[in-house]
Every structure is written in structure tokens, then in C-alpha cells.
Length: 128
Image 1: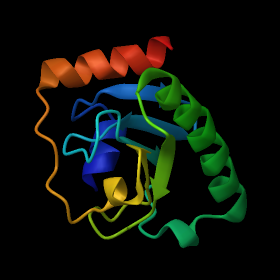
Image 2: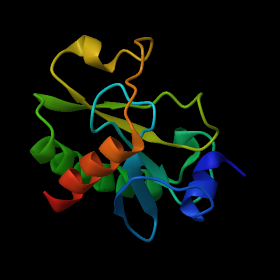
Image 3: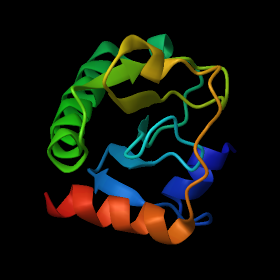
């Protein structure tokens, strides 16, 4: 069982941004930028391209809705999208507020954001 499945099952807390019957969006706790959000399917599949095409398509539609919410709440030019797929063996998409290409460089140091600030960011995004 992955850490993401434990989050879905409520065993590990998260700063939830959005949820549907099939997907969950929550803030990354080691973000590249404020508002960096992860989109995961509720089914545990390691590799994103092993998802059934309908699930993958619906995941992108869900990500689009979440990206628009982030865009309204966080000062940025765009929401960058990345799929790395090596950190956690559970398919996921990174939505990262960006102002230039280097903002989505995963080799950069991650931000240290307190749980209280993460909660404030999550509230700002969900209320937007």
C-alpha cells in the first residue's frame, strides 16, 4: 500500500484541495512553489500510462478544474504540469504554479512551508 493510498483512506492527513469519487487533489508537503498540488487516482496503479485511457482522460479533466482553482488563488503566469512517476509508486500529476520554466525544475530545493501555512493555502484555493 502506498503513502497515497493511506492518504485516500484517511490514515495519513493531507491538505485537500478537491475530491471526486475517482480522484483526490492535495497540496504537496515538499512543494516547488506555494500551491503545488498532487492529483492522484483513487485506484492504486504505479505507472500513469498503465491507467485505462478513460481514467487517464478523466484524471486530466479533474486536473484542469483544480489547476483553474490554483491559478485564481496563487500569483503565477501559469500552472505547470509534470508527471515524474518515480517518487511514489502510485500514478500522480504535479500541478505547479510557475512564472518561468525553471520554476518546475524538480532538482531545485523544495520550500519549507509550515502545516498552518499549507492549511491557509488550501483554504484559499478551495474557496476561490
